[in-house]
Length: 122
Image (cartoon, rainbow, N blue to C red):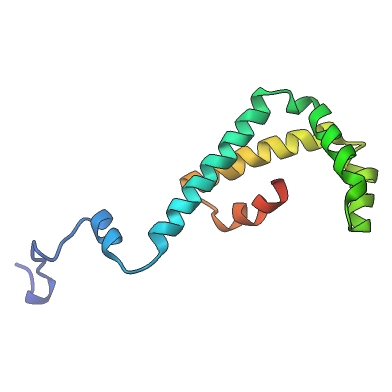
């Protein structure tokens, strides 16, 4: 026998998915943006993985073309002194970083961390 305070009426029980869409918050829209952004990162990561980006030549060309125009002297020095000599490593880092960010955004795990890393790979 249940106590009167613990009885659950059928009309009070709703599926959690339907209840989430009736809430008056913007979390559903934020989740939609998160999923679309995850799809974008997964797409660009797979393009780099299946293309010739892992050889480092594409990244090297982009860095040589845009590096001298960088307005920040410390960033220009970092690009020319550290990234360009290790361009092969950074091509792998960018590719698998984009894939990891895309998967984590799509699955919704560690959402704050990939959103912090996302601007650094665009």
